[in-house]
Image (cartoon, rainbow, N blue to C red; front, top):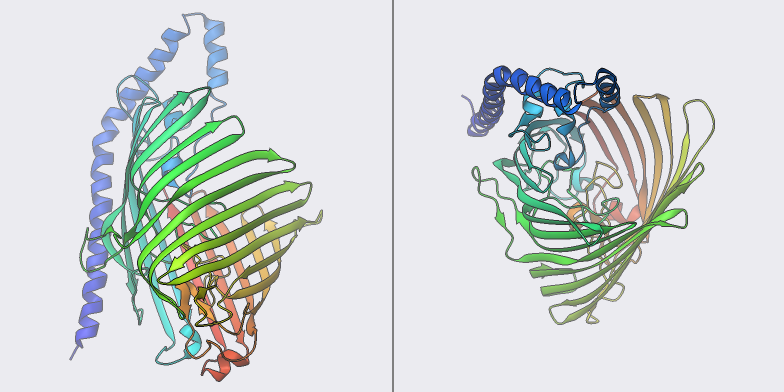
Length: 505
C-alpha cells in the first residue's frame, strides 16, 4: 500500500511539472503568434534605417558598419536590468525565439516587450543539518525554481516588469518558507526614468528585489530556493559620480499553502537612505542608514518590538592585481525594554598572480558581535538583516551572528569557462556569552553561554562551469569539523554536497 506521504510527494511533483509545463506552453504559444509578425517588424525597421540614410550609398554603408558594432545583450542576475532594444538593429544576428526577446511596440525602437525564463535545479545532500543535534537527520533532496517574466519599455521613460516564481522542494525532510513557494508573484513594479538637473532620476514602485554591495546584509537571497522581494517605493538620483537612493519597504512574507498567497509582512519594515560615490582614490565608497522595525522580535536575551537603526559604510576597488571589499555596520536601537549595541565587519581581498590558470589568492575576514552579558538590559547580538545564504558556503552551517571568521582561498581558471575554488574556513564565537548561530539566525541548541570560543573549521571545494552562453553548472562540497562546544551540545561533524544547473533565456 502506498503511504499518504508518498502519495503527497507524488502529487506535489505532478503539480510542479504541470505548472512548469503550463508556463512553457504559454510561452510557446506566444512565440508561434510572434513568428509571423517579427519579420514584418524587422523589415519596417530596416526601411526606416534606409530612409534616415537619405539615399546616399556611402552614408548608408557607413551607418550599417557602425550599427553592426552593437553587441547582443546577455542574461543578467537581475533580469529587469537587461536592455534588448539592440535587437531593433537589423544587422544584429538573430537567434531562435528572438521574436519573444524583442516585441516592438509602435515605431520607436526603444518601446518593446521582452519575455524571459530562469530555471534552477539543485540536488543537495546534508548528512547533519544543525550538526545532527536533536531530531535533525541526514537529508538528500532536490530544490527547483522556475521564473518567467515580461519586461515592457515605453520609450526611454517607463518600464513595467512582472515576474512569476514557482519554487518546490522534493524529498526534503523539513520544508520551510525559503524552500517552497508555489506559483506566485515574485516581482511586479513600474519605473519612471527621466532627466533632472543634469542627472538621471528614477522612481520605482511595486514588488521588487533589492540588494546592496556584496549582499552580506541586504540581498535577494539567491542561495536558498525562494528569493526575497520587498513591496517598496524606491527613488534614486544619479549625477556624475554620485548616486543617492531612498527606499521604504515591507518585505514579502512567503506562504506555501496555495498559489498567489504571498503578502506584505505587516510586522516588518525596512526603510532608509543610501549614497554611492565612484572614484574615491582607487575605489568606490557607499553607505546607508536604514530603520529596521519588527513587531515580534525574539532574541536569547530580549523579546518584543524591535526598532533597529543600521549604519553601514563600504569601500571597494582594485589596483593592479589587487582587489578588496571592506564593509562595516553599526546597529543601535531597542528590543522591548533593552537597548541595542551591535556591530559587524566584513572584508574580502585578493591578489591575481601572473601565472597559468590565473590563480587568485584570497583572504576573507568577518566578525559580528554577540551578547556578552545576558540580562543586563543591552542586546549586543548582531542582526544580519537579509543575508544572501551563500556568503560563507551553500551549506549554511553558520550565520553572520556572534562570529569571527577567517577564510583563505585560491581560485583557478583552467579555461575561460571554468573556475575552481578551494578554501579553508576557521570560525570562533565573538563571545561565549552568546550562542553559535546557523543561517537565518537559528540558534544551535545547547551552545549559549557554554563551551569555548572555538566553533570549528571547514573545507570548501567548488567548481563553476559555463556550459553554454546561458547554461551554468556548479558543484560544491563542504566538510565542517566541529569544535568541542558543538560536540558537547550533542553535535558532530557535517558534510554537504550540492550539484546545480542554472539556465536563463
